[in-house]
Image (cartoon, rainbow, N blue to C red; front, side):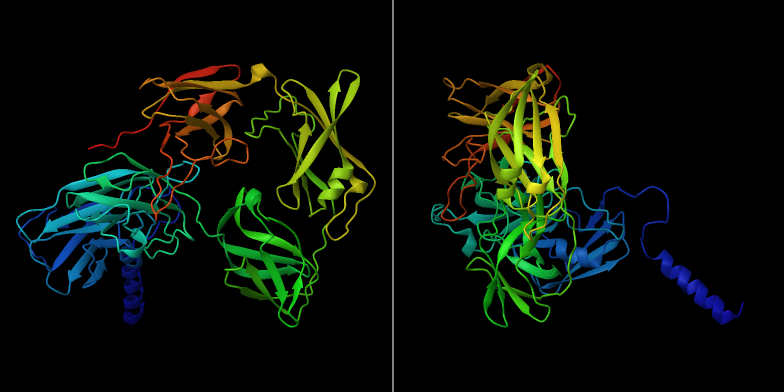
Length: 567
């Protein structure tokens, strides 16, 4: 081999060795990213370093390091430098005198292999003889009460002369920030002793600023949190503003795929504010229906069924009066799909259907291959209860989950241990574009599980006075059952029992309702409060472990406790 060729090969091998990339084959590297050492040592006093050096167990990504670093007090006079497993923060201006500085590396930090910190890490030093030692901790949950990973927690110091009732976090820069870990927990360390206002959010745009109109937020149920309080809990609420479209494309000459800025529950999506306008003539295009391409309870992209779209036209898409419009071009392509019934729940032949929906009337769900007219379902569908040789016709109402999925709510509701039959005369079903199918009868006969097939959960709730709502949530985050408990006598725990649960795994949550918000199931809903003017969220708690429910069994001695956050 020529010397020049050998030099080139060796250079390439050395370059490849310098990058911490996943090996080909073998098990996935899931070990967490760890900080091995920091210089100067953590909690040092009487120092004014020109740099801080972190040593990791993996090679870190420079871009993720830049995103993950936050200072308190805020600093902008620094640069970042990475070299393999070493990262440096170099100060470009002298630091202030007699001040505690904190540097937080948040859980957004990644190695080249994708390894991440399990918890945010806070490093502190002081340019004076004393260092702040205040601590505030807690946990952030998503709206469905699952732990919220990488939620951003912001803290504002409240001076003694500040009225917490008039303090507006939206108009002030936060003094501290930290991201939650995988389990939703957070810990703010090296705080100046005193009182703070805390808010949590999902920082979708990464600007580390409050935007409750467009990002999930948690106001909390206290507007003053003191250092030493470690059991603070926050539950994220949906953004105040409706979602807005960010992109669109024409899937066919009557179909628009519209993507929104955040996920929306399919059952809660409202197409009424959607306006599609042909910009060539200013004429609105009818919005006739919608559905999702993915079979998920939430989605960002909806397929909108419209009137005819023209290939040469550009269409203006707006969702509500305050939405910024987006634009997309039409198409002459057509999408040919046949009409069929693709699903019935409970399915045909089911001998033990567990209908544990929190709805007071248990629905039968029908799914079609294409969007259909709701009125045609009312004409085509029939519901019967089968009693031996007798067949009893049942009345029902319909409700659209989207233009392909419909629920039939029988009157009276489906009862445990009984057998039913749903029939759909398919030639009476009409698609939104007048599609029809052959004359055939689709049917499903099923039996609802008997009383002794279900299980129950019993236990106690303690730590709060007043009315308490206890909810059982399935593994998909869907509310299965709830019960409202009257105020207990004195400080005694309240006992609860939730029956009619299908065998499986559940998580329990509870809240103290201070408002009369109603869930679509008819039960009371958790109230998220308001950041400004401050209104406290309903206090809530979540069970520590999942609860296993077995057929015919009572799973008991489950204790829910509202945490005390006093220092």
